[in-house]
Each structure stands twice: as C-alpha cells, then as structure tokens.
Length: 268
Image (tube, rainbow, N blue to C red):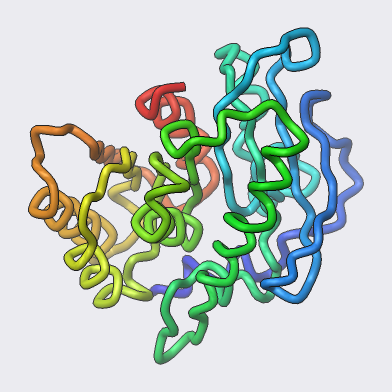
C-alpha cells in the first residue's frame, strides 16, 4: 500500500519525548525565514570536529527530514546517527538538515501534484534551499560552495525530491543520495523529466530494500530510472550506483545502515 511512504512521517515528526537528546556537541540548530514557503524553518547543522580549530573550507550535504537525522528525541522511528557516523569517519563535511513541514511534508517534497494525494510544491521548497538557505550557509560558514562539493540527500519523498533537485539544479547540486525514493507518486512526470533533461553530470547513489513493497515496484521504478539515466548519459561514466538491501524495509534502520557507504561512494 503506497500510504506506507506517507503516513508515518506525517503523523508527527516533532513528537514530545522525555528522553535525553542524543545529538552530539557538533550539532546546533537555528531558525530561518522561508519566504518561498510563507513560514520559518528549523535547521540542524553538523560541523566536523576540527571545524573550530582549522581554517579549511568544507563540502556540504543538504538533507531533508532533519528531525530524524541526529537526535532520537525528535525522531519518528529512530535516528540516522548522522553525527556519530561522521565523527567515526572523521568526515570533513558540513551537514545541513532541513526540518520537514509536518503536515505539509508531502506537499513540499513532491515535484508534481498527484491526482489522489495532492502535493506538488517541491519547486518552492527547493527554491528556499537554493536561494535562501544555501546563501546563508555559505556566508556564515567556511564552505566549498561549488556544485561538485554540494550534495542533496533524503529518503522516501525526500529521496524523490533529492533526485529531482540534481536534475533541476545542475549548477547547484552535483551529487545526490536517493534512498527509497517515492517515484510512484510522480512516476510519469519523473520519467519524462529524466528523459528530457540534458547534460546530467551528477553522481547519484540509489538505495532501497527488497522488502519495501510486496509487488516490487520500488525496485522496478529504480531500475527504470537507472535505464533512463544510462540512455541519457553513457554508462561508462559510472555516475550512478544502485544498492538493493536484502530484507531491507522502508524505515530509518535501512537508511541509517546505508548512510556511510553512500557518502563514501559520493566522495566523503
């Protein structure tokens, strides 16, 4: 049932919990106006351990659903442990997590309107990231702002929007982590968008589990997108990687466990 991709993260994504925060000291938060969305948005920021003692500049990963990335206290069904995993790798990268809009999550993370579920405001959401949030991050922190050092990453609807973003904004994002993408909700439009797009230079890491759906449409959709990309650009460039996890389900555990291999393949 397709609602498996929508309902869990719509139920709440800012639940109240008595447990202690598990975010590391490298993680901070701030709120920024999001005029494109007619609201403000809480942002979670991870800085590498050596950020304060160095003068170097760092690549940046922009990630959706920030409530689930760093802190078990705010996560829906377990965090991704992004901060701990990056610390263990001594990864030289800044992560910018954008909190989802709660009940507006589906609306903001779908590029096109779906006849049954609505949505279709990802252009406004990405406009916020590209033209409001990223300039602020690049101004306040020592970043490498060029496309080859800028990644966008997410899961489910966030995976769909991350894929859309690297095609729509090739001069902003040159890498993407696309986990369990909900291509089904905009299948025809995304396929057509892929086919019609030229000069696709982005590196894209696809991840899904073989137990996410009973009918296997997740894998079918990924295989078809991979085929369209390979028609659009030569397979010999090795710009796509697809990982299918045996027994993997549509949940934070799958995405948490796949995070390290994804960022390593992407060059971090």
